[in-house]
Length: 196
Image 1 (cartoon, rainbow, N blue to C red):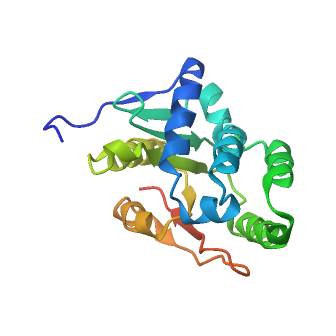
Image 2: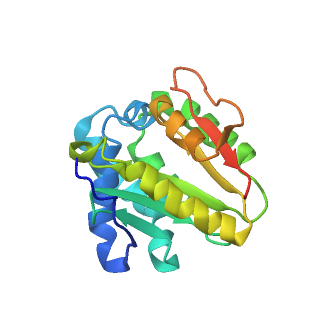
Image 3: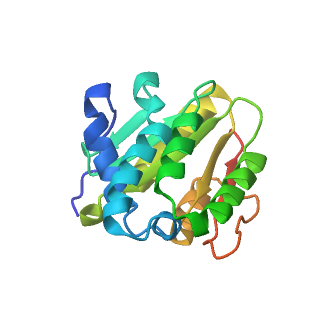
């Protein structure tokens, strides 16, 4: 770990593959994602495509962020920008085992119910390359984005798919709204942050 604070910059569309690769690496031990795709070869293919559909619109919106180049990445969707739900549905339909599909669908339906209806800053995905965890990269990414949400006077919202990350989000002002779990799924935790 260096004494220098992490460098945060907006990711360009040309950075898309690098940022998504970092996210795929960072989610490789995520409880929810690996429950959805327990086989590594299925996970690598599906998560790469889902990350692009879920958060890829951040690149064109200028709200995808890189920390220390691509050691960590966050794909924030600003007000008025949304995931590509149709593409996500198609990928999930192709890649999830049939015996798990009902519970996956129920989790996503409940995520929709928690998602605020007003214009918000939404964080679909944030992750650090596992080789660079513990360097303050996630915190730097969160600070950068929440300052932007505050400047806009907008709510920030996310769903934590890993209980280990909840304390990071709480340190940046996010509050737990509830818990989502269906059948044998791991817990998904929706969290909201009022502007300051």
